[in-house]
Length: 176
Image (cartoon, rainbow, N blue to C red; front, side, top):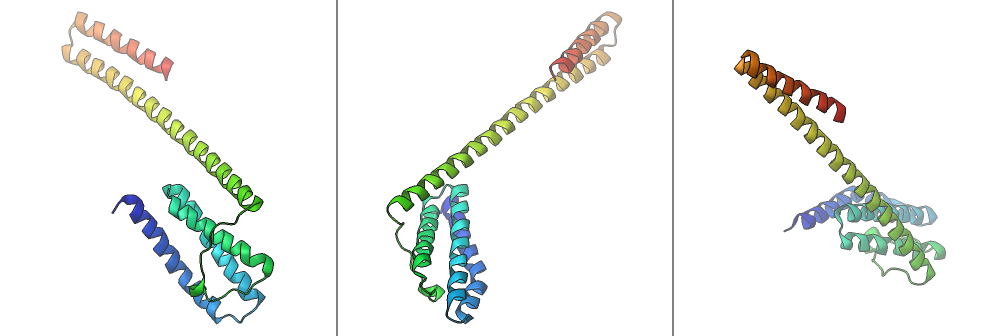
């Protein structure tokens, strides 16, 4: 079992667990518009969570399930069909035509924007880590030179090492 499979299973089971009380309330609600709207809201929220998890985990199956749920909700909305039992809900194929193309374009744009944002964050973290490593390296070099100067303690050798340490410290201040 891969990490992605484990993560997907965790997402699905968490959603199922979270939906249990909401589905029970939905079954207890009287037939009508409120029940239908409540069911559609549950499916929309489920689809949103699946889409977000699919994007985060880069799992195409979760993204496809989210698209199917959204399309099922969209198909129920215009006709005003009452929401049936949550256990009897079926997953339908994504809608076709201009609406599907538009939804696909919006999803692609959102995914591209998210990828760009992740890339910028990763780049900032990489630069920050490199700068921290360089600073640490300079500090360690200065400390090593100072330690050598203290160990030698002689007037000529120690003086040269102290001057080298001071030069390194000045250089570190200028570049840092």
